[in-house]
Image 1 (tube, one colour):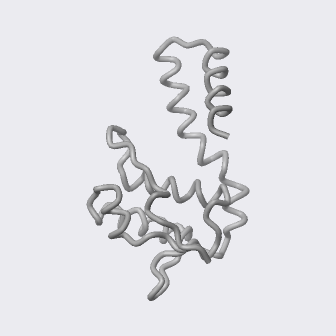
Image 2 (tube, rainbow, N blue to C red):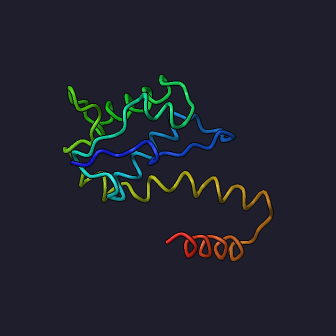
Length: 132
């Protein structure tokens, strides 16, 4: 069981997406991608709040949402850990679903900028190459 540091999280302060959702989405993606394994500990609410300079209630709201969804378990004395139950099913069945909203926003922005499909796809391919 690994315990992760608050640096696993980043936030976009100028985003229209609320910070608690940004944090929850990151945990979902990290779990779906295998970067967080069942039983791994998450950093404390206080540590994340301090590292990101956000209100602790914001972090607590994200963790609570993930606990209600069954992504996280609260363990007395150990804090929040990645849930064991249903982990493999969430990992395999939700990768595309987790990425879709981001790509839909990118597609909308490409349309607003009047980029054609080929230019948008070429840009996305280059970004994927830059971040292996």
